[in-house]
Image (cartoon, rainbow, N blue to C red; front, side, top):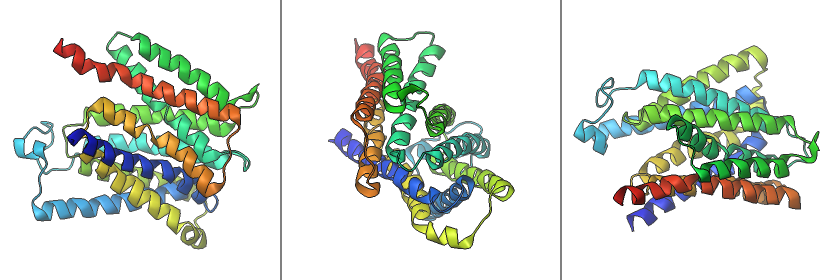
Length: 311
């Protein structure tokens, strides 16, 4: 029952993340990459900061805080500054590549769906990296890599290598950045997750603002026109979805959690079709299916790990 509860919460988080691709497409119609990212990051920071204040005021402590099992470099209740800065730097790169890719897709391309599925390949990338670090590349992980490459070819190269878009390359770069972000976050898994995320959004927002001031023109009318997409991405994607992820993972097994959260890519395609009237060709749909199956296959070794330990 607990696993079902956790899976439900994680699916809701995946829903917000998947539909946020639509908000990003809408936001790119009104403003530059860094202006939009600065807005959503600062909104996410303010939302999480209010959550932290509420949490401290009510005296609600996490299980790790009560047991004193935090990272030795961070006192219970303290702010993980170093971890937040590192996470913020990587998150800035990931979000910049993703938003730039979405903005550069031609109008006739299903930007939300393509970006969603290509971003989802970070799951396979993480699986490969962890396998290499562990000095053992399992057969299923290798199979998922091959499947992902085949799916990406179907999705992105309908006219061969000449048919790939710049947005595809940036989305793939974004996937590598998000893979790095997951590994950095894992290093600081023993610190206060909400405060860690709060700092990372502040750092990412500051970097985006600096780039915005240096390369883009801030127009108040454009910001107001994109207020909806900015608030949606900042509050629901960054704040609410992240909190649901933390709560959900307290109940669901890690492998199950990864599989449920990978539904983000499917939701991105569906949201793009329903809200933006995006249409994928048969070849592109086949590519999406292959990528999604590969993402699931990449989780199987972790899913089987607990059973193997029991044996």
